[in-house]
Image (cartoon, rainbow, N blue to C red; front, side, top):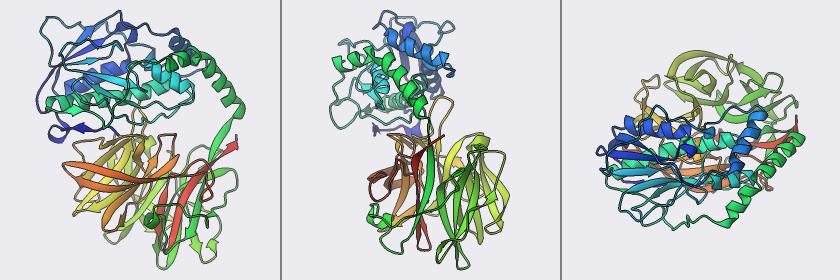
Length: 503
């Protein structure tokens, strides 16, 4: 994961910089403008240097984007960005920092420079070659003053089969990484990884790019023929001891699958015990509507008592029914990112009737909100994306003294920026006196695995976690292709998984 050190105060640059963005008009992207705006919001002075004549953009990229346009894909910001309204920088005075977005080679001048890195190269065609080969490129930031070349992060790619959308995802995250790297420069630090990385362009990806349009078209045809759809399912088992949170490993077996009728899938399981009875809450998504609701079923001595029945439904998609007790009440915070709110519900007649109690956040799309109390304060974790970025790789935190709020965003949001270990995957738990959180491993795709993370720091100054292990589906412990939720209560452990079904 990318390490930037040191930070300015609460994520704000320690001093104001004169920053020059060097841009080749032939390679201008919408995310370049987003980067300039982010730097100005941080207080830096930004000038644009239009620097044409860099490496020629391969025709393969334009051809792929044109193919996507013909198939109805939304126009990507990778298609270009007009800079007619931006004045080229004037004067000969060197800036404090140049961010080179041209993809060209650096000269030996002592000017402090940063540049985006795509899949081990300084130009985006390396990422396109990897994407069309079925890979998922890593991204990072090169710092001319770093002893090592950059550590790379796993970006969230919410549609890896669409090259334009994937380039938008990469660009949105690079804008954040470069802005943070500028903060590090302002604070007198560097952005660097722990080991060298060769950034010399190689024939491997250049050859791959030559075949990229053909591979892309073939992948689209195969995808259309397969027409597979993910079908999530919930597994449960009795586990008073030997829980996953104790062993940090999937058991060899013992799971029972919550039956479904084939017309829906169940996912995001949470367990809650009340008055000697144990209830399983799930996301319930009927294929006929494509809009999920929250359902619940009792887990009796012989297993589920019937089929899950609806307990909460709205006019937006609901999932991730985070159920918990506090202040003598039972609460639920379901994900409702489609309404751009985080809403708190109170059980009026548990478990079947819930009433809206408060809106904790509004105007922001938060995925999988999860609350934990630590050091006498409440902390809410959730994943946040945007119009161009995936929500799989950005973890945000808010804090409050009261459940109803107000909730204040952490000064260093996003506190984790990596698809491996960002998005929440269940309730926090304690192990050997330490606070732990399950997180999704989306580096290879949404919900590909579970990262079990030990929390090293959680306070107003920052957040840090250490990924101790990553659990993957596909073996004897849990067949399938996905694994993205883990919870336990009252001796019942639950997970979910994914398999492919025909549409």
